[in-house]
Image 1 (cartoon, rainbow, N blue to C red):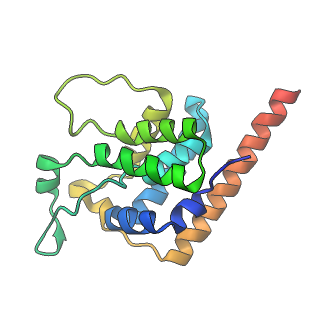
Image 2 (spheres, helix red, strand yellow):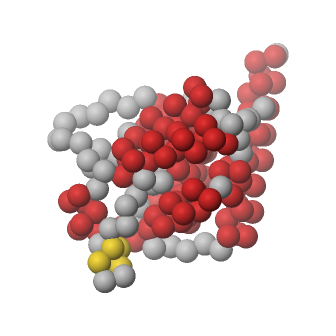
Length: 178
């Protein structure tokens, strides 16, 4: 049984404010990619989808003249740091298990290395899944942040993904009982 669903996360005002401004359509697409990748990397699909949904919750509004300014973002952004904090606080408020909230938040923190000094970062499987999910939906010059999705469609898509996650977790639980 999951403590918090994707729809509950979506409906929260913090998600509406911060994920919407960085691209809800992108966040939902990443959650679906993370669900698919979770099987390949043997990670909990619930944690993967939640981290992918929230991975850009820390974005600052890097806009110039009303349009997303990708160069300002690339030069100055530390959204993963702010995002990890916001994601953790949101998840705890919603009733997520503290250990799960921490794992999700760390995956948000490490979904990109754009703010880190050059080097090689060694990611755990959940963190890798979120990184790959984000990369799978990226468009040149940050175009993925511009895509729009209607709230009703978003909620339907997330409810469907919630059900897919429940089905997968139930299937894994049944395997463990056999």
